[in-house]
Image 1 (cartoon, one colour):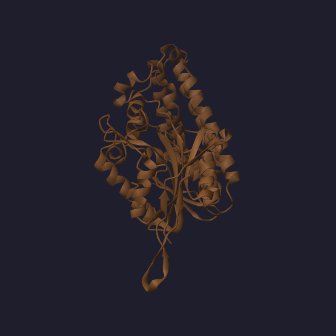
Image 2: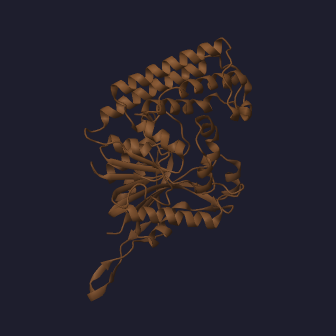
Image 3: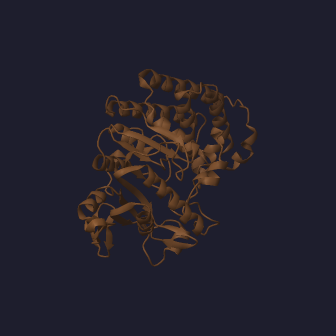
Length: 417
């Protein structure tokens, strides 16, 4: 395997002082669920990281993890195991690319002081909903409100009562069949009449969670099976699922643990969260040139009335006209968010990043090596990493990675002490 050797050098007064760990190019692979895993660096740390790539399928919908789908999110098992292994109860955990909040939910359940940020206001809403337990009365109100809204919307749909059509709805005829869109407009209008408090936010997130399920599929025959009333009742069942998950989260969270602090913020500037002081940074940054979060969630931004323009402007790693990320911008952005992680981490803190090989200026990039090289310059010492092949399903990516494996990595860095 690759090893990382610690080399001392003579500092002032002739005393030996530790320098950056140097990676030697020897690798060893071992097989786990999901395929062979290559490990590099400190052997014990690499073994601990390898455990993160063997997820327990039973945790996929534990707590509030099953409430809202979100592309590219970290597996709950990975988050739970990393938090247990690399932090202690009461310590501060940060996810600066928090997405829908998987790391934050697991940190809260483990009794950590969690904080997270994301450039997407949609992601922040979902993360807040998934980590705000509401209490027994709030959960009961959530379920009852969703039930009443669903019954009224379904009844209107069965009677073919036409709801008010929003001005922005012209393009939705391409995404939904007419009877489905009309029922969803009715649901949206009724949800809009509720209070804009924690329960109201959960109801809005519930609408967001069902939209994609009822969009036109590749096979129209399947879409035609969606009967009137089905979207409404699915919305109610989603609220019930959320309430059960929130109750489970409340039971599992140690007494006195505060909900996570979650902000809409750019990972290249974490000042809205804190100046410094995190014991563990655990995150899955965007993969270069493989995804566009703003475009992917366009329907949800539109139906929830959320602004999208700022996310389009600041999101990192988005495709550049089909050729991957623009090289200079991607390199600049990665340097900035790594620099911010280095700034807010306590000395000796672990920084664990789940990264995937991406596309920069039309060419494949070894994400782990690139992160390690940049991290060294910023005072984050590479300790270990594990890598596992992730064959691309996208035709464009298959062409770009032809002849070489595309891999996902978990990289462990340490803030220099």
